[in-house]
Length: 385
Image 1 (cartoon, rainbow, N blue to C red):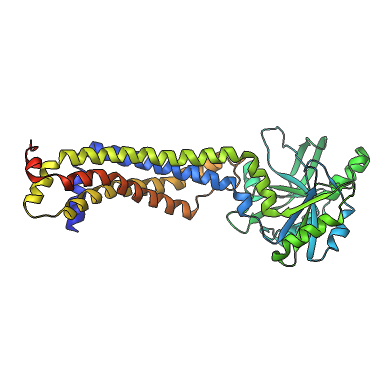
Image 2 (cartoon, one colour):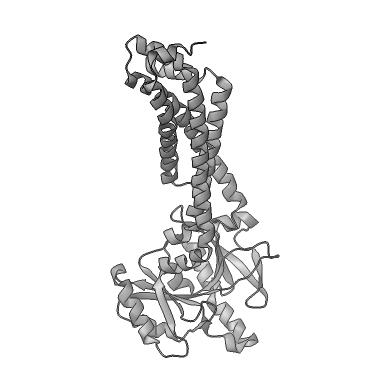
């Protein structure tokens, strides 16, 4: 307790300098935490992927569709427990600014494959029985203040025209990492309309979603599915859901790497700032350290005082930065919900923040400690005044 009191008084001898240093550390830790959370949000879809699901798409590109006739043949492949299908619709609500993911799905099989989308049974039944019905995530419903029974028009970009839907359900995520900003409607509704307007685009789907009997058989089942359609007019590429999501992240990998580099540069800068503060502090107290030595205190006592003060300052700043990260991240996530539907500070981020706070304190105290321990008593006493 006495040692902590000594460290506190030493740290606040120059209150303004100490407060500015703590503020700088807080801002740096806050920035680091936010940048790491942005990176985590970038990989949210990857992290939420299931090992028990595969995605089958056209081998040429995701832009090209697959015949719906493939459904039964995929279902007969050994190791497949269930199959569903979906189309990326690409519609917008009122204006292009109101972007959100929207898909045409086969309701029964799709919802069975994605138990993380929690929907009340009455709402689920209403959605399944209404061909023009739709379901949306809780965050999306809150964003546009939608209620059950509302009519929601989407302006098609890939499929031209204005499409009218009736909101039949609002799902919640089973986990915090579940995306609650998606929009789902009946594939049959899309297909029937296409048969009338654009017959050549009917009876096609964008991807097949495959449920596995055993997640460990993902590689074998993928090869078997692709072999089934080899040399056909629409060959397939089957991969795990995680690999499918990673293919999108890889398109912006340079941005992710840049964000990670910037986050570590921030830590390096604040390390230099704290090191400068501690160097100034040690230089001002050389005479005091010499007196301590003359009284019989060893080098480890001097080292404990310098390292203790350095750690006290950095940990105080780090804790303030960590506490600020949560409300700031919540506000940032609300503003950037269109781009980051899942934006939450991971517990590991807080641990990393605390680790770097300690690391900065230790490294910043190294040189001042080395200099203070090596100073001779006579040389130190000559610096008094």
